[in-house]
Image (cartoon, rainbow, N blue to C red; front, side, top):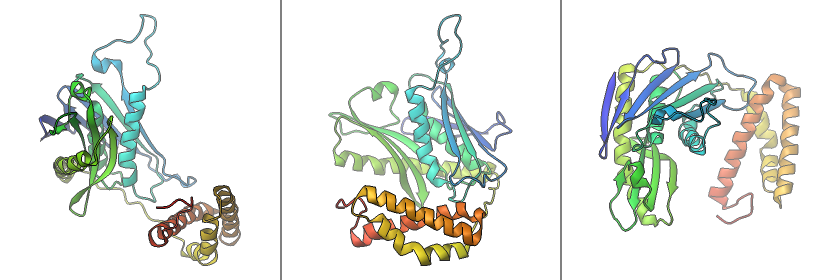
Length: 323
């Protein structure tokens, strides 16, 4: 099935098909003659031995996408990813990573492939959109969708160009890539990538509301696609051990705060490392080895709370700098 929307002067075509039917979700996005495919997969079981979320995002670009054949007649293998490909992978990663559930420990892999590049429309914006659609229609737990848009404000001009061409991007001026997610009926920007020789604050502040209008259109379109084609999301049960939480908060909260605000950064790190090791030993002794990984996550969450309260309510930072 195909869905269309217009952003600025560019038509975005989203296609859901069976090219990657074994994946949890997939999508194609076409802008002009640039075509990008995103495929999202998730392992069927939790990785309980991990204390982090195993997400892999890879953007792939091949010479064939631009109609080229690489190298000599004897060498046909393509080399490592280009700097552009690595940076595009990171842009997609930064946009989607915060929207996964905190307790998700299943391995998730997102592969974004540029199938065709027309040398006019950049594939990174299309790649973010394709990734968002692939995750949204899949059964992978995810709090999207997200929209993405590039805005350019050329030097000596008050006009903003939405999704500028590659040629337009070579001109000096503000080059802004914005990604946003729907929050409480409004679009909240959750990723910004920008480049400029110099940019006035007023320029950026004018660009963001303009971007929000277009991001809202993209998010609404994706919500309509999900209603029509989306799979039911896998439910990830939240693991909770109240006895461990109570032990850490009652016995160690004050000690963690004292360790976090030592006179120097070196003392700070040493005190925290020693205290965390002590807490984990206590948890292992009293509650068993299987609760240690859970305790690590709870200590990290408690440190985040302590840091936030001290910064916002006491104007106190662990690095001793002023706000």
